[in-house]
Amino acid sequence: MKLIVGLGNPGISYSRTRHNIGFLVIKSIIGRRTTRFRRDSGISSLSAKVKLEGQEVLLAMPTTFMNLSGRAVAGLVKKYKIAPQNLLIVCDDLNLEFGRLRLRPGGSSGGHKGLKSIIDSLECNDFPRLRVGIGRPLRPQADVSEYVLEPFGRRQKEQLSLMLKEACDCCRAWLTDGIENCMNSFNS
Image (cartoon, rainbow, N blue to C red; front, side, top):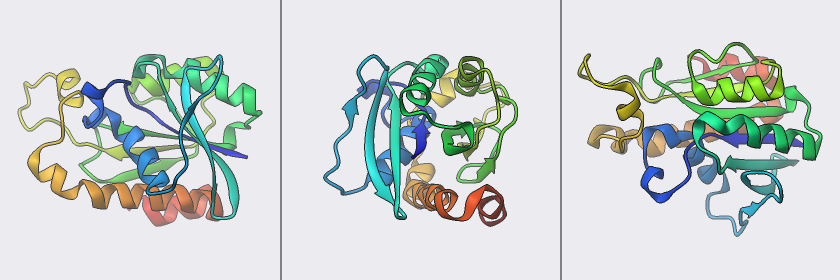
């Protein structure tokens, strides 16, 4: 089984914010399916088992706040016996222009506190991650922590569905084509 985890913050007030792009990707993968997310007992996460590209996949969204995502991911990895290479984390990235994707097989957190929490909890950084660009604030003096928790701007909202489709396509390609081929296709 493979595990795809979208990062975000729980609660309706965060649901359409830039920091919740991981949740939006997971919900887009589910799409119009009748699949329902359920609470994993003892793990701070909502998850759904689905068939994607002929494979059994667990889609998950931690119910912890972003900075504590590692607790939920470590619990899921342990419960479902997921090897690091079969885990894909989907998260936002300030340093990528809006809509740009960057898939990597591992590496540092790059300053992303959700990724740092996962790396610390798993005690490894050798798991794939899909970073989805949310861009930086237009005003150089703007507070970055406020920016990520704001809703998408008007122009970004117009591009959001296309970006989510591409991120979903990348997740599906990761399942079938492997990390290297997928990186060649989506890291443009």
